[in-house]
Image 1 (cartoon, rainbow, N blue to C red):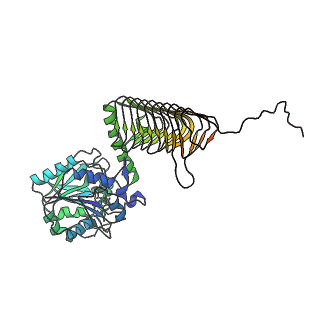
Image 2 (image 1 turned 90 degrees about the vertical axis):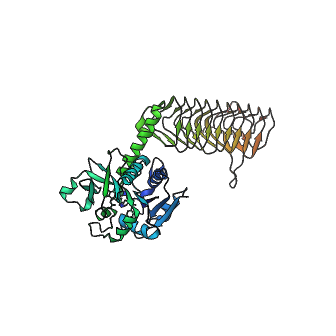
Length: 449
Ligand code: UD1
Ligand code: CA
């Protein structure tokens, strides 16, 4: 029987944040969610998440929580206290208990498995992951005696000599839960932080083992925003390396960010300062960027998007967008279309080969195939209370500076005169024009005053 406890009750004082530490994100996913995802891979029998500081917020952040049971630790008197609360809240303290700090987000399931295997094979009372750090500052130092761990001393309780020990406690433990619960209530807070330390269990249990692994970034704990940013960089580097090995070019890798879920096809070029977020798919042969942001969208083959923003939309094949356009949610731009500069499109469908080249707002609209929208066209879709639809049939030519006062429905091959305010529907092959006729006053001279 394998149970997991994730410690997520602390405030994270050193983050200097109103957000609980474990809800800070790395590449779009919270620290806590990352730890949960790693241990779900082990298929444990039960997962406990110990929350305390802003526990409602922390609990609500976990959406898929079928396997998770929350335990509240209030007040938060230290990591050992958190496990005292857990042992009291759970009836049967039996089998193995894997304890993970909620602020060690990059821990891999393979490493957790190694720890469990060592623990089982040696029939240990507690096994924990250690590593030698060049700069061990802030971590608990692990002191060995022969093959066993003798004790762990926290940074704040170390003397100068103890501080020189590079072997640190990663905050990942596997306990024999029965043995742990026999001694858990004997922990005291007689230390410099006046906290009940989980690390003090080590010298109370015998047969305590260390699984020392290479310091490869996986064990980085996050206490402050410098460490948060280091972890972000290391996750981003591995995401980008994966894409580069799969045939994606980055022009200026450091200035770009890519979500873990993003899929990118071969021969895609990602120009500088481009950010691909959420569940986005970029198909082959596209050039994206510079200065482009795409979230939860699908971009087809051979598209070029520069200096633009795209949210929750479908961009089909051979499309050019930008510079400086904004494609807002629920838009579909069909193949061979072109969206030029300073164009905003929202909740609209553009059929194939349509063009909106300059300075336009197209909202709640359906634009037919091969229709050209002239510069400065606006769909006035909001009457102050409700949004209304604009429909323009295929092969139409919309004159510059046309305003469509929606709801409006134009047939196919319709032309509108430049500067028209269109308030009435029109049939196929119509010229719709609504503007005052030009008057030419000939031989007119400005009066001199
Ligand atoms: C802890 C370890 C240290 C180790 C380091 C690894 C202890 C005493 N020290 O130190 O040996 O090297 O992690 O990263 O355990 N938490 C609770 N309830 C509390 C206090 C903390 O749930 O009352 C949670 C926090 O939310 C956090 C985790 O426990 O996720 C670790 O707490 P933190 O205060 O960051 O411990 P460290 O000082 O980093
Ligand atoms: Ca920590």
